[in-house]
Image 1 (tube, one colour):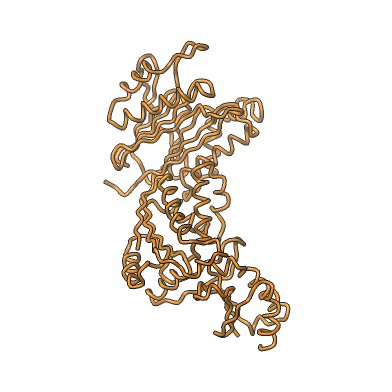
Image 2 (spheres, chains in turn purple, blue):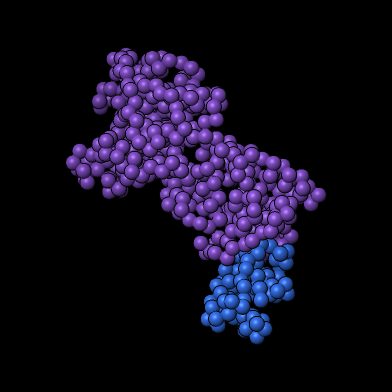
Length: 390
Length: 79
């Protein structure tokens, strides 16, 4: 047992003019510390490709997670996939990243570009062994994991990016490695790595991808707890209990909300100092309390965090905002999306009498639904989320 | 003299930022930077009267429209 875990992030670009993507990523957990990630690229594009890749990725991920061998998986796919009338073949290429007990990775490639491993930000070529299963050549490698390893699985849309548009022969794997080494930052999440690579592919395609293009990254990282306190408890007698439980938790502490921050400052016996710097005109400035990582305003800041979180799960285009800005919402995003793996919410259900003014767009229900939406989005990012109400 | 403006949710929505910017601008135009200290605070519990501003502890209800008058009557005249 170690203290590592996987951060998995992926995204696809559709073939220009198609609504459905022919690439498919499926992630299935196999026990608490093992994951099977499959990236399948169906032959052709559109509906047919989508069906092929969905079948392939679902069959492989489910079977592998149940402990079946790769030979059985491939045999099942070969006898299941419908045969394309035009080409007389039935296939979908695939890559499997099998993370075992967060200690070891098994990488299996069938006709997709070879998986790239960045170790400490530098390319680390995997040793591949070829094996033949049912007439198909499949490459397999195994490696012991290290903290900070980033595995990059791609569909061939990446290496074909820019063919006959901006590049003669497409974007070669070596050039992709060079690009990713240059862009590497140890703080980036798997999703950010995937988005950076995909954005560059899209640029090379001049925004009209000639093939479905998918990147899936798996980053091996240390588990890091983070605790977020928002709202005073519904019974004022519970303030000390709530604060004691919150500050006893291991990891970072974020306090959201004006009244809540004042209570936290009182509990800690430290002064609260509020800054007047508006890094974003719509987000109230942050404050400081000694012993607390971050102190922000509540609902307005949190609404923005929810927007960023939902975008993160889609195309993640807004990482260009939250990844560097200094406003309260961006700071919360960096702590929750990048730094944390385990997040504990401490939510107070007190109704702020000042907010029950019909002229204000803040209601108790909005506050509660913000926390629900945020925890749902964080779970979508693969975080372990726990919510306690007071 | 210390002037504190509330930047809690409710006051923020009622225009704290505009008031802070107006006051900061007027303070520097009148070269009062060493006499008037500007600060922010989270909720002081009088949201319905916001935007809440205090001058050395004395409470004022200010809006973006009345910020210039507040500066003239309560800061410039009293500093």
